[in-house]
Length: 187
Image 1 (cartoon, rainbow, N blue to C red):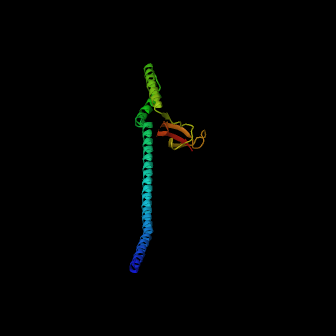
Image 2 (spheres, one colour):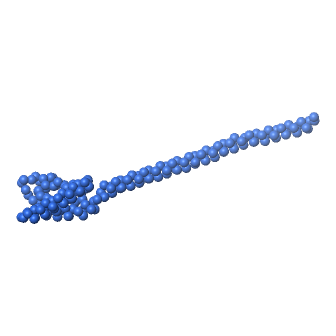
Image 3 (cartoon, one colour):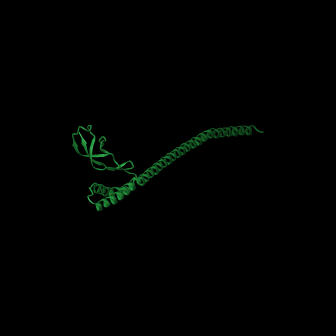
């Protein structure tokens, strides 16, 4: 082999070495760029996943709250379903009680009152089955949630702020006042 050929081969080897070194030098940079890009994509996907999970959890909590609210409303409707009818029946019950307070002067009136008492009793029992109960008033301390004061009087037989007389009965349906008692209160 000639020297020129050797020199050309040497130069070709050096050139190849430089190209190989450049390729190998670029390869770590390319790997680092690819890893960085994958890392960015991964973090973006993790953010989207977290957002989706949070949105799902919020929607589920909203739905659970909605379901609970509907259940409470339905229970309340069922519990107080007869309130409208009872409110309409209370004046009739008051009239029965007023009629029963009259004095019977003959046998026919007494029999009529007896029949009215039976009807009154069955009406009161039916209302009790629905959860209606009268509000106790006379002798009780005045409670603005249960009583409606229409008069005040000074009475030494009662302490201050105590119901002295009841003008109209009040009623509760389960735990709800449907009509407060109209009362006279001591000062």
